[in-house]
Amino acid sequence: MRVRIRFSLRSLLLLTVVVAGGCYWMALPSVYAQRFVTAVAAGDYAAADALFADPDDRFLEQWDNDYTIIQRRAQVEPSSWRERWRGERQISVRLIYRTPVRTNGYVARIVATRGGLGSPQVWSGGSSLGGGLAARRIPPPYALPFPPYESPRH
Image (cartoon, rainbow, N blue to C red; front, side):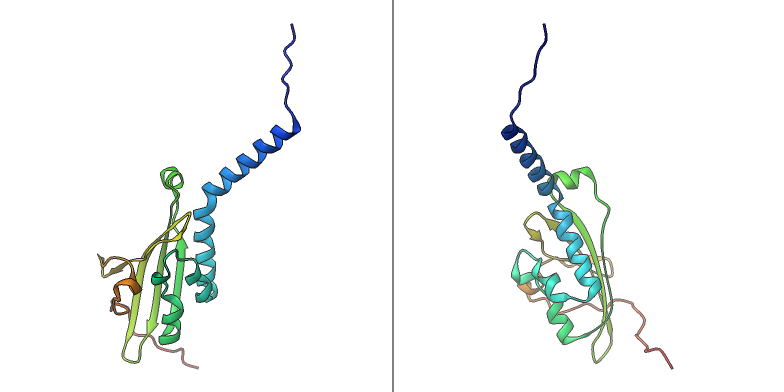
């Protein structure tokens, strides 16, 4: 007795769409995180700010207008299966910028979710100061023990 498995092209197409949609849904936080890191590395702060889920958390473009950003570094942290299942990716951000008075640093962790980027969790000298920079109107930023910036001598 031979058993034949029957399927239709319609059910195969539907299965393909469902699997592709599920893979995209799982990868979406990584896509947001990588877009943010690429935008920060390129200095496109408007594009990076547009990825925040809450418009009150956008701060990069404003800081670029107010301060001289000397060094910018953002990277996507390695992920675990648990983070992927929860739909999160961790991003670490470090900015060093100069005000008219001194050189300051900004170190934060941002969680990318399927809905966009969450509020930055800011650290200054190792102590967490909470998130939601613009929402809480925390004065930017915090003095960190970075050496003062000196322009290269020609």
